[in-house]
Image (cartoon, rainbow, N blue to C red; front, side):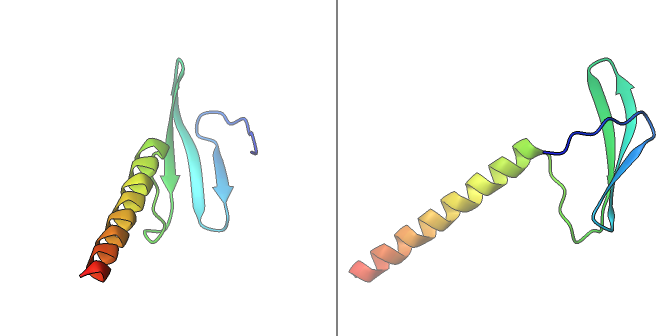
Length: 72
């Protein structure tokens, strides 16, 4: 992991077309803005984990259905 210090209104660039900017700092909260192409999804990590788990469950269910079809 790369750890960087940034002040308000300072940015970090990832690759050629993603920019992360510190918008505001209030106490222990930091508000960030992310500029990225629409083709690149940006998620909060907790939401990303939920999506990933739901996709895994859907695949497992689809495999179970295919297994059942094989028995018929």
